[in-house]
Length: 352
Image (cartoon, rainbow, N blue to C red; front, top):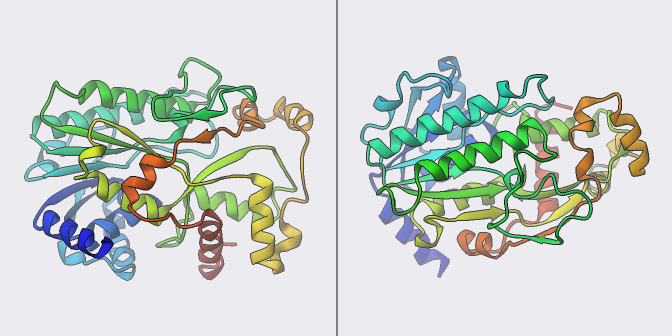
């Protein structure tokens, strides 16, 4: 059944052009590979043209046919080039969004580029008559800010409150996605919108940029996390996430909907235990114990980044995985396999 579905997808994608923003990112590279393997032509956006060759080499090494790959220079904060980039495009996959590991003093420096970039990309796609936009949002737009006593189960109808107890990154994801729905409100335009809301993204690296996810693993392996806060990360393997994005380009059920991409939740300490077993040589570098919440709250008084996440301590709701599993079309890769793949990539590339 999956064999015939794959053949059908390739036939449907033949000669179709996808504008992919954020191609140099961890997810973006995997999206390019998945799109090329599915038979699409890809026009990848770069903010820094000097990264063109290295990006193409990494995609080719991962199995992407770069004869169907081209690049265009775009910036989320500038109007230049967007109209030209959307010329001849059938689909837009908007994965580019700013991310920081340390929250900025002025949250607008993170929120404004995310919202304005979404405005530029989606408005241009709508005006160009693009068939469908697949937007990479986040479960940050669904889960955070509720506190430990929040609802035990959440689904795609739930939204985090941008004016609640959330950090700048979470607010950027909420406001950017809401802007997307405003621009491509179902019934008001011929351009359809499908939104994917991934959790913490793990899996193999395509190059030597560890990305945001890899940076956490680096801290583990370098002994920089002696104790683990009681934080839970709803996670997804990047290979599954890329395939979900490709499926969302044409799947009827994805149009006009949000789809949660998360297939398991593990605490920081659970992650550490998984890595200890898989990589015993680094065991002594890993977190030794789970810190009590009172200790993390005390430390948050002097650390703004910890303070920005303290409300999430102990909150671990179940998320509605069923639509995501249906879109993926097969059982997801076990999250622990994704953790191990991330760590193995870091070791092989001498990044720890």
